[in-house]
Image (cartoon, rainbow, N blue to C red; front, side, top):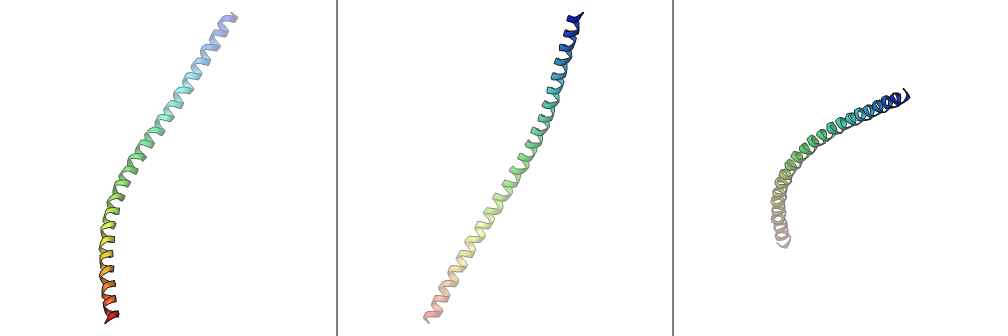
Length: 80
């Protein structure tokens, strides 16, 4: 009789540990999925920001040319 009691306790213990492990795995899978979605959203933001950086770089180049022209005009005016 004692042997069956010990076996029953061991079976319950194994069942409890497996259930606890499965719950932990489920939570981890949810977290992994949320991270995947966040990573995907961040990649999209990175692509948008790359485009904005390229647009700003073009604007900076135009501003640089304008400043150079303005400086040459100012130098000519000083010399005159």
